[in-house]
Length: 363
Ligand SMILES: Cc1ncc(COP(=O)(O)O)c(C=O)c1O
Image (cartoon, rainbow, N blue to C red; front, side, top):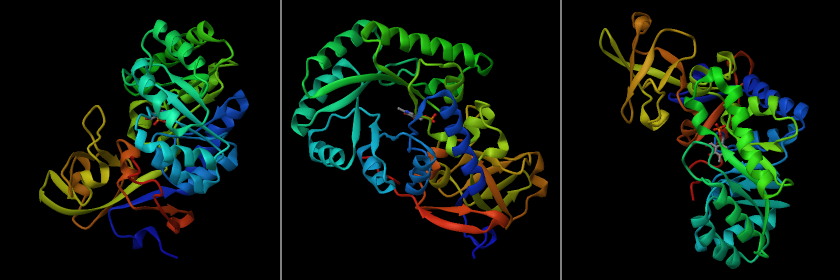
């Protein structure tokens, strides 16, 4: 059996025991609170992980793009929520075919402007869909900004025989950069906002917030107010969830990048063979692309396409030819850049090589 030591670099490793623990922990928390887990697959893009999430009790999957959802059908999923603003009439046949393969395909309505284009698209698809209305809760991306607008959208949907409004959803991406000591207060404000609007439109609507930073706090305090959460990054973790948001212990991070030190042009700079084509250009607020998993004081502070620039107090211990395990700043983009990930079991043995099924499925 291949071992981590035999792998070429850069390689993307997934620690099976940590992955399994992360999946269990989130599912158990949701089960105990009576809240459905509808994990976003944008992070892992892997059928075997989707299958495991469903086996453990996930009610359905969340995807951004049609291509991701099509790739996830192989997991046996029965319910998918496409949390994205669909507008393209060229996709009508694909939407119909996807719906045909599922018990439920829920779609998103993200603003009045979106609804104007979405309605003709759905007429072209010519099926009835449950829809969730996006509410902006501070990320300033998609989602209804004003309550009057939500009321108008709800009435328009109500009058459309092909659409059924079933709930409100939000994505609290702004929580990644928020003051974490106030998370419970922030989550309470978030729930007050969504539930207040829900009550004004129709108290029977479902409420689905979603983000790995807020998911556990939502689950802990929501008590009857929330029907589902849609975290994605919790399966692997990264610097955003551990160091920045402080919602995941370091030892739970399940995805690591294995890289090799290929040069040390000066005593205070090492170069590794993983750059922006491995880590993407996403960085932490401090400008860091990755740090070593073993706690050494080193950081990848700059990336070119095929090089990562490493500096830090412990650079004296680093030699050309060394292999380093790194935790990336943002895990979702790392997975989308690799053809396959290595599932690592006990004693650093490779248990499986998983092709990344929805890699690059952005259409
Ligand atoms: C609409 C939506 N839902 C859920 C998620 C999952 O959030 P996270 O990656 O923080 O777990 C995302 C992430 O971008 C998203 O855009």
